Amino acid sequence: MSLSFTNGIAVHSRARALVPLCVGAGAYLFFLTIGDTLLQDSDSFWQIKIGQWILDHGAMPYTDFYSFTRPGAPWISTSWLSQVAYAFTYAQWGWAGPVILTALAMAVSAAVFVDLLDAHLEVPRSVLFAMLAVVLSLHHILARPHILALPVMIAWVGMLMAAADRKGAPSWVWLPLMSLWANLHGGFVLGLALIGPMAFEAIWGLDSGKQVRLLLRWFLFGVAAMAACCVTPYGWRTLLGATNILNLGELLSVISEWMPANFASFSAFEGALLGLIAIGLFRGLTLSPPRILLILLLTWMGLTHVRSIEAFAFLVPLVLAKPLGEKSPLPQRARGTESPAARYVTMMGALMIAAAAWTSTSIYMSHHRFSFTMEQTPVTAVDLLQQRKARRIFNAYQFGGYLISRDIPVFVDGRAELYGEKFVMDFFKAVEVKKLDNLTRLLEEYKIDATLMVADAPAAQVLDHIKGWKRLYADDIAVIHVRDDAPDAAAPAKP
Image 1 (cartoon, one colour):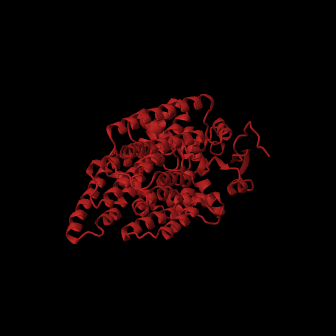
Image 2 (image 1 turned 90 degrees about the horizontal axis):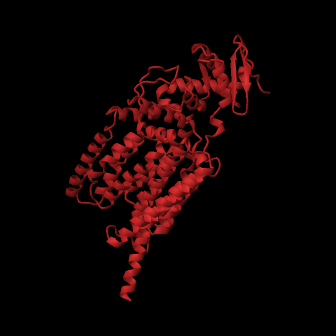
Image 3 (image 1 turned 45 degrees about the horizontal axis):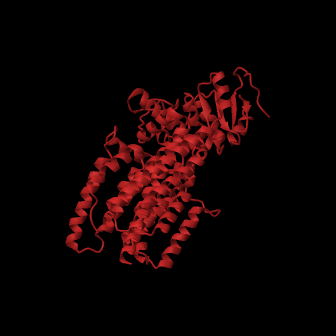
């Protein structure tokens, strides 16, 4: 009976070790299957274009050379490594490359997330949290740099939380994670910001003498982490570049992904908040003040900017894992207890899962061609503008990335930190025609010879009635207006 029980534990340990791998494989195949939905943001175009420029020139950009409104203005790319990765895969496999890379990043994110939760929670609950986190993040899972940085964010915060849970300090061995994050995406500032609350969680409940010594160790780790995030081609300027986006004031309430959460209709995020309250009440959780502060901080971020909902989705469960595990009647997993045989089974399982995923990818790619969403790619309209040799195009915000991919100088694009709050706010007010003077002033000030607006933009309708402008072309995606004195085009406007 004792032998049977021991064998049961060994089998269970091996099964648990394979769970993160299986979850990661499932996430990869899911996002590969819905890969076209990852190609819905025109920012992917200019991200890839910058990555191609870096690969071609073997240098880093320090000024803007894609717009005609800010040529030569100081600008650095805090996501250069992600951009290079996306550009390389795009050059090799077309849009399938960025899709596969994004799906892999989500697979690693899910696997790391489940593995971290598995230290405190039983398998079904860990997998359930992973599924909920993915569902909450679906709106922002796109072929863009923040997804490549997502597994690093999860691993970094999981490491900090583990150190706080054991009432110790993080190991400096993990500092390269911060350097990697800083090269992948500007969101690394969140990792720096969370060191303080995690440190207070670590010292909470200790006697004063131990608190001082441990707090000093966390402080030194924080200083080292700040130094580590400067290990990029831009050095200390990486910090400034990453924080510039947070200084855009009113503009953050206009750009869709920086808008606050909207509860006008029921959403997954609203359900998650209600679920979080229900879990706390049902389980009777008693959390330390620093842990409460962490949850409130992550919740506030999700409420303030919808792009931060994935941070809420993946990080709040890491903060709650130990308190929830202590309330669970099931035994928790003891790390580092796997036998050599168990590790061998895990490695073989990992190889089999990787082989199956690669085979599935090859089969799927052989009969499916990934393509970017048509709403972001006004191909026919841009072809016409190139035929007319239009040089100064007043373009819709969402068309900026596509124009850059076509080597056409843009009026504005997704790099809001380059253009600044006032310029982009003036642009949005002009497009929405909140002030007619804004539209006419910008058209004259920047000597615009053509406009490229989305089909239902108020500016596109108003330009039909402004003297000196005429509608040249329209379809379901875009509308072109040119000056009256411009030569006629071959393509007539559609009704």
